Structure formats: C-alpha cells, structure tokens
Length: 433
Image (cartoon, rainbow, N blue to C red; front, side, top):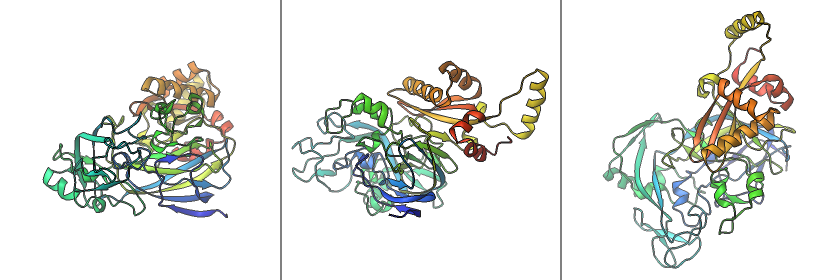
C-alpha cells in the first residue's frame, strides 16, 4: 500500500497493543496523523469487556520505519472535544478480577471472564453482567468529581450532585464519545464529592508513542504498569526479559507532551506503529490521585523517521517554558558572555542543547536510575558523568507516580550530531550555535 501524506485514525484497540495489532496507514515520512481519541482510564476501567485500562487508537505504520530506527513525533495541536469529564481515586472491587483489575476482569458473581454487560440507569452499580445481572465493574470511585468545561475550553468547574446526575443520564453526549469507542463513559457514575473547584485546561495525550514488541494491555506499556505483567496470573503475562526489552514507554502521562512538544520514540516493530490516547484535560506532575480528567480529543502530529537511532525509551523535547530552570537553552547574548569569560579562563565552552530522557520502573527511584542508565548508554557517558550533568544542568521531574520520570540535562551538540538528532533539537529550541 502506498503511503499517505495524512492519516486519520478513529478506531481503537480492545485494550491490547502489540506486534499483532492491526496497523493502519502507512503515513509518509514527513506526513501527518490526526488521532480522534476516546477517554482513557476510568471509562475503559469500568468497562468489563475491555482488556486494558485504556482504549488507544489502532497504531499507524510509518513509511520506512524499521526496528532499530526512531520516529520523531511533533505535537502540533491537541483539541479537547468533550464538554465534561469525571475522575477520582479508585478502589478495586474484590472478586471482580484475577491478578490485575485493569486487565483480567471477571464477573464477581458468575465468574464470567470479560463479561458482556448492559448499563441500567446511572451510578457505580449501573454496569451489569448480562449473564447474571450482577454489578460487573471492577472499580469503585471512592472520592470523585464531575467537571464541566467552558465553551472555549479554557477552564473547568466541578459541579454538584444534581447536575452530575443530569450529566450522567446523557453521558455519551457530554463526553463526546467517538462513535467507534466501546467504553462506558465515566460520567455515568455521577460523582460529585468536590463542588466548585476550578482548574485550567492544559491538554496533552497521556499515551503517545510506538507499539511495543510484545502483546500487552495498552495501559501497561510503561515501566511501572508493565512491571505488574511479569509472571502475572492471566493471559497477558510477560517475562522479565520481555519487560526489559520490548516495552516502548508510550504511556507517559507527562504533562509536557503537549502542543509544541517533540517525542522521539523507539521503533521496536517494523512500521513503528504510532498510536495515541488517554488525553488529559489537565494534570499536575505525578498524577497523584492515580487518574485525572480524561477527555475525547483530536490530536494532530507530524512524523519523521531517524534511521539507525536505537532507543530503549523515549526522548522528550518539551516546550521551552516547561524545561526546569537549569536545563533551559542559552541565548545568543548569554553565550557571547560565556565565551568571553570561559576564554579568559583558558577554557572553550562546549555548545549544548537541552533534552529529556524518560526513565521508567516499578517506583520513582528505579525509574530515575533507569533514566540515568539510558542517558549514559545513549550518550556514551559514564553513569557518574550523567549524574553530575543532571545535577548542575538539569533536573529529575516526576511524570507519574509510581514510576515515570523526566531526566533533563544539557547535552553536548557533538554528541547529538553523532546520534543524528542535533538539527531537530537546535531547530526546536532556536539555539544560537
């Protein structure tokens, strides 16, 4: 099939993503993808038939992308389509799953795996097993809210129970759920434990990356969630070797993966398989409640291939204002002063550029260590050199608890030249070199 300059994708996985997933496209190298995404997290979580905690798009093949290459994803726009969202802190329902409530869902009464269901009314017990009639959602929202957006999507306000229940009765419309989505909209729960709380919209896709080299639940394509798949008691178990080798960390929940960001993602299956989902209307670092305001959205990206750039996980170039202070790029007037001072000291300063290496693991400490290790391997530096550079030219920031971090550092341009990404970084940050 010939490549296309633009691919629109509005079809979704059944919660499983990997080398056996059907790919659409291919999109041309230099082309664009428009993702129409369904809400992530809560909707798929409470839907008994979905085999993952999200409902991401079918992956898009990229012309010329082969294992061992990398795909550059330029985030051009993220448009919220939903009129409202709901979220909160979760509690799994005992007896409604085997090993992992996001993955191996069973009816707590008749034990039917991934039971067919019907929605009767609203509220947390409205999702019923079609076989026996028992409540079949594997999660309860112990403290939650319904948040309504203003017309131009600048902010949201949490509403009272009366309005939350009114919205629940028309949940599909309020969530602007895409026609091909199979989830139960979380607005059906009608939660209103927070009233009158206001938040700014700052949308970004929580999932944006490439297809893993093993079939796994889509929500588990990351070092923290993926850790629970090792020797798990369900059909989607993986080995420790697969965990270390095959994931691509597409499930980042990093709030800087927003309009204006660039993600450089590893290719671990031929074609790359770029996918998206789980767009959040807003989220603070850490996503400490476990979940946030998932929305239907339209995300537009541009795609390029970098040949022979073998990555273990993503590189992120966030918008400049999202970089930590010590990692921000030097401007020409600053660099002119640096040159004068350094040369007086008999030193030639190295031109550098900021970027972030994503680290992931079962907890934050392990994620940070993984980020340092990935940086050391990629940049051909000693581990200790990475620690020093991050300390005085960058930072470690929490993307998501329990185990996604952004390791920021200034990297010598000569190192980025060897990797073939120096022009991408220089252009992105408009560097003076």
